[in-house]
Length: 348
Image (cartoon, rainbow, N blue to C red; front, side, top):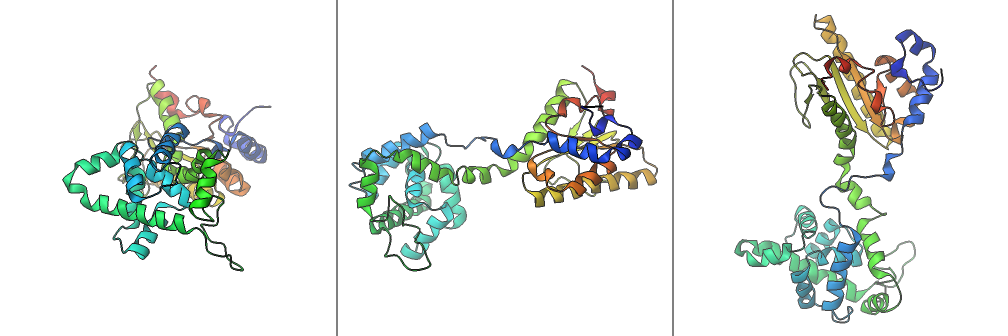
């Protein structure tokens, strides 16, 4: 019957139509890499542009790029540090390494990441200046500013065969002359810097919210459980639960006497998908062990999405059979409760 999904079939039907059901599951998987959680620290373009304009004003269109003019801009908007890093085209740890090697700064990569994150708060630098206990951080920021100016003024060295210098960009190749040209001419320079700030683009932000990507599916499952008034226990990251070698993401109604356990995962990488499928199979193995020990049988349910799961057909074939077809995607999640024993706990 067209439109059927593996979780709607008996085990016998599933085994007979397994290849059809693998294809149906693959068709439901979405390419989630186009959507990312914004999190609480994502810098939107208007915010970045405001910081760029603050630095541009303070430096007279980058004609007077000095420690004093940059710090003046920082007093107005702390994200100026992010703009300056984008001109360099470096990551925060790379910028810290320049400050360590060139100026002998004691700034660590971790400290640089922390400053890069904190400067997204517009008055971060103002508050640092107001605090007597922040002297070390202010010194490290000064070192970052000084080494940035040093490298921007120098520009790129002459080309060498076989290598490309990181400063050989249109806005830094010839030092301040290149930078002033980028600012002066009809180049959407703030837009370019914003894309560079995000990285590849959005790569920097994607790395920062990698853990939140997985929570998108967990949140979707939790929303449906709440709306249905289902009793459940959501486990914490790396939490240990007695009787489980690895804890599932959800136990329904609880972990003491589970009737359904759910593992919720999203991935766009085939290697990561393989590891996550292995994890789900291990939950099935644990379930069978519990049954052999005389404990009540419970359902193991997988809620997955992302193109990574589409890459290994044999893995999906095995997973569907092991979990009796109880594999749901973002597309079919609206049928999760009605097609599992979760329906026994609906109270709304």
